[in-house]
Length: 87
Image (cartoon, rainbow, N blue to C red; front, top):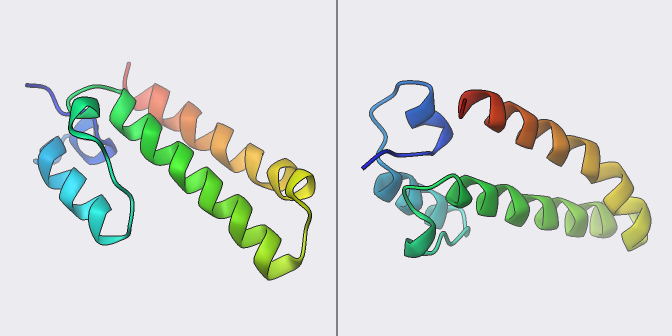
C-alpha cells in the first residue's frame, strides 16, 4: 500500500501506520480508515489548524474570527505544499 504522509511522499521509509503512531504521541489521532490515502494527512492538517486557532485565542486573546483569519494562510500554505508533494 502506498503511504501518503509527507515523509513518505518525500521518499523516506515512513509507513502511514508508523506516522499514525508518531502523530498520536503529540495528541493527534488519525483514524485507521484514513491511512494509506491523502485524507490522513489532510485530517492531521485540519486538527493542527484547529489547535492553532485555539492557541491564538488563548495566547493572544483573539476572538475566534480573528484567530481563524490569522491561522488560515498557514493552513492553506500547508495544504498547497502537501498537494505539490502528492502529485
